[in-house]
Image 1: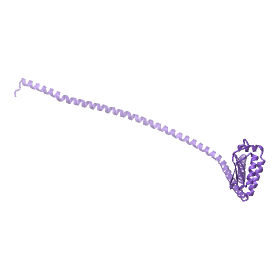
Image 2: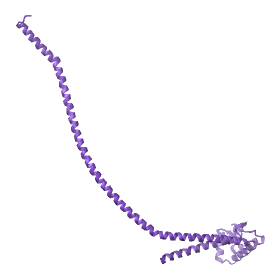
Image 3: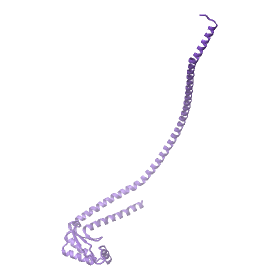
Image 4: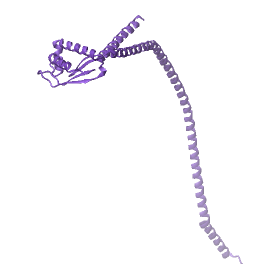
Length: 268
């Protein structure tokens, strides 16, 4: 192959064309890829630096907050210890005060217990005495004793003062001198016809009571009568007398115990 000027020029042109083609279709894309890769790397590095900076800031904040928390914890522990000590002292003082009050009450409680035991003993004695009296009276109770109690009741009705007669008449609804209110007569034993007629006559004269009269028996009365007249009850029987005796004794004992206990406290 001859090398002349035209051939040399053509070779130069071919070389330039080759360089242009390489630059246009090979180097430029490669350079673009390299540039993009470099940009990505730089961006990643920047992000990493930012993250590192943020992490360092967070670390400093955490260390600062940890130090503050430790300080706050110490303050809270001291405050809690002071409050616990204060509450302990208050509770001990309250406990000591309660113990003093209990010591003061102890003597009163013991005395009250003794009084209650004494009252129970006396009440038991009263009940047993009433039972004994009831048993004793029941042995002597009979129709003869009941007749005596009936006569006693009739005599008492005849001797009633005028004001008591008016009260009993009003209780039986005596506004006009006649009444339809029932009079209930309870006896321990059957009443004969003569006794019933006498009782009705005395009630009519003394209380303006015209009946009707209803008669019934209750052996628990032992002996005697119980007359229900309106809201009033006329009782002349052993059962009510024994019950009243027991109640009076209990009331008298309660008053005596109250006076005795008061005097005892005054002497102290």
